[in-house]
Image 1 (cartoon, rainbow, N blue to C red):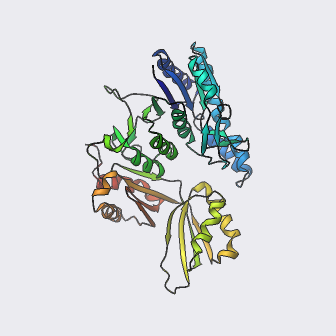
Image 2: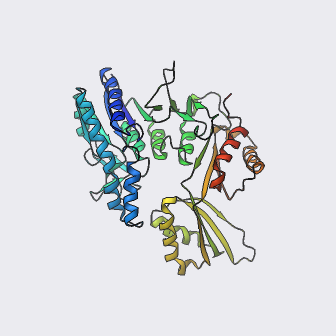
Image 3: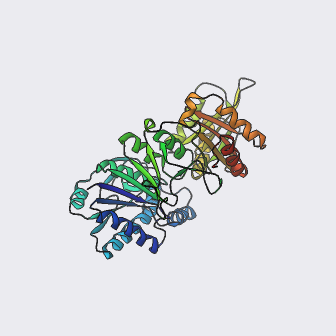
Amino acid sequence: MARIVLKFGGTSVGDIDRIKNVARKVEQEVKAGHQVAVVVSAMSGVTNQLVKYCNDIDKLHDAREYDAVVASGEQVTSGLLAIALQSLGIPARSWAGWQVPIRTDDTHGKARIVSIDTTEMEKSLQTGEVAVVAGFQGVSEQGRIATLGRGGSDTSAVALAAAVKADRCDIYTDVDGVYTTDPRIVAKARKLDKITYEEMLEMASQGAKVLQTRSVEMAMNHRVRVQVLSSFEAAAGSSLPGTLVVDEDEIVEKEVVSGIAYSRDEAKITLVGVADQPGVAAAIFGPLTDNAVNVDMIVQNVSEDGKSTDMTFTVGKADIARAVKVLEDAQSTLNYKRIVSDANVVKVSVIGVGMRSHAGVAQRMFKALADKGINIQVISTSEIKISVLIAEEYAELALRALHTAYGLDAA
């Protein structure tokens, strides 16, 4: 008998028929003698609608009330799945994040899990009852509902798997594994049988929607074995129908580039005419940090006169209004000339652990984009990743060009 955590995303529970289909998949695991906990997302489209309600009332809404609204989607799904399982004769109950409890910090909208007390859930699992947990949420230090950020149900699932010492964590989604890039854009994208934690972490952080960044981070830290697979089909003749996220030493031959990720959730902000002196970067990014605005790519232009320069950086599109307001409020301190913001950008990243031992990876990327007439606005790198910011209109062209340039096209 194994202990398994299954996670089902929004498309997997998108309507009543799909929820019933999920119940049948859970039934198979229960009949195999396993103890099962299930983590669910909100039904497809529900969270977006709830977010829209909040933004329609006030774009600078109270984050605590925002969490109270958007967390309701997962609670609905967990209750419906518990009912579906009960209709099949399987003992089941739903658990909201605060009932487990999954304790978080007080950063509403982007809370981090502090601890999970599984005492009561352990009792439930030992009796054979399926625990259906609302993903994406927990309870803050102040006793308020707190959400983990978009895609947080993956984090809930991996964290729960670590807490209950599960044998594996299966992440069911609308794709049958992790691909070299988005197969909806690049027809020649290939499914990977295995990918390292590090590569998956970079893929997730650079925009790949298969797994959420913190879930991969948590899986790597706690060595939770994760499998990504489809709710709707399994690869023929495969005992492992999806993609396994594993340690690097399990992959014998490492590709130079394993995948290409992209993110449309980017916005660019430029502060024009900033004083070119020590401490100016801290003065700019300090207030943003204090207001929970995450900054990603940063570039500072060379100052010709030694007095002023331009500072360009990216934030999430959802944070652009908040970021601009924070910077406008600090204008008297920062003494910049003006703010220029642009939400029509996309970040494209090439990723692979093989980069560590190969030269010329960046040059190939820059040449492939140049050959297509695509201008690079910002560049950032890490040991196994190179990212560029380009105009959004060139996103699909860039993905196809880079996929071919690095030899990732399927035969």
